[in-house]
Amino acid sequence: MPHPVAIHFREIDATALAAATGRLVVLAAPGERPSQAVRQIDRRARGAIVRALASESFAKLKQGEAMDLAFPSGLAAEAVQLVHLTRRATVAEARKAGASIAKGLGASGALVLAGAHRLAHEISFGLALRAYDFGAHKTGAPKVFGEVGFQVSAPEAVALRASPMAALAEGVFFARDLINEPANVLTTDDFAARLAAMHELGLDVEILEEAALKALGMGALLGVGLGSDSPTKVVVMQWNGGPKGEPPLALIGKGVVFDTGGISIKPALGMEEMTMDMGGAGVVAGVMRALALRGAKANVVGLVGLVENMPDGRAQRPGDVVRSMKGDTIEVNNTDAEGRLVLADVLWYAQERFKPAAMIDLATLTGAIIVGLGHENAGAFSNNDALVGALLKAASAEGEGAWRMPMGEAYDAKLKSRIADMRNSFGRPGGAITAAQFLARFVKPETPWVHLDIAGVALPPEETAMAPKGATGWGVMTLDRLVRDGWERG
Image (cartoon, rainbow, N blue to C red; front, side):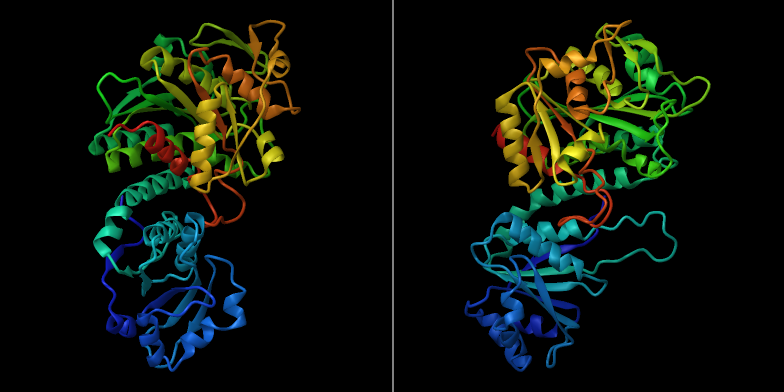
């Protein structure tokens, strides 16, 4: 999977800077003396760069923000972009600077004078994340990003630090591509085939078809797909980069490729966005891709339940009772609360087969989490303080918002059913919490577990700092960081 933009690291060369024909990018801070290289090109630009750096307009910029000098006299560049970034900038500010560069990037490319900045690799990562465009279904010439060269003091060292981040970026792009795809393209068959192709990266990929799922007793998952012509599947992706026999970290994703709501059909307005209801599965796939590409020294298994929720004469009805793989019966009082039915069986299967050391599921599960947290934070629910604490720390380090939500017996009591062991939905009050309480019934007491409701962050209505409008790939960076910090050996 190619990068949307090619990035290279080179020695500082003032002559090359003056001759650059695309965009010339200068990192600087108000009040700081410009570097020798900047002063050299400024002489060619007849002092325009230094004057701009001393201006009130530049001083008003926040860290990571930029301003342009178009067609500077004396230079071949079409524009000089001045980016406000101090030597003490944070990782988030460095990535924001990279994103600012990417926003102005075109086919002519750019040359970035990063010098000895200690976060040059993070700047390049932010640039790569923002230089993304999903144009697979647009006619005409695709959007092209020209090559970006970073002039740095120690190119080999910077390239070495940037290498694993390139793998991470590919994981993010893979998740975004999956989430952005329309449902007539990304069917359950197509989704499974894309995951199976990652066998070439060293992942062990297995596809469980409906016959196998029936034999396993996955009645909750299979019930969701009864109204669709697309077959229900579970895809298992194993990465065994850690010690042999060490229990893996299990990542589980909801993969509803399209969600009409079933018989409890959704309103027409906005239903087209339900192509993103496989966002949890997309993120799990992106994480597994990143781990394989960078050769993570950890054992991680990713499991995704792929299904389509459609209404027809075969579809399950409100009031139906299904039996889960665990053996519990569920009254389906709302067929639009289908994601938890998918996850229930896959969570149980993951524990029965892999005996994981910990388990994290991701799902675009409820609109209620958007009401509570907006599009800035995912909701985190957990039975284990240490695991959720580590996850929240990883999310903060990667600039991906997450907030822990409450759980408790009072919420769990709302799931009582008159005719079955439980019902799948209580209604709107505390909807994200009762959904998490439902999932908790399929988590064994000895299994540390986190549930991430990513409904608000998977496909926000506006662009974000690191992504254009569309899928963000939220969670790939957080989970990769969690693996690096807490699960890798050696």
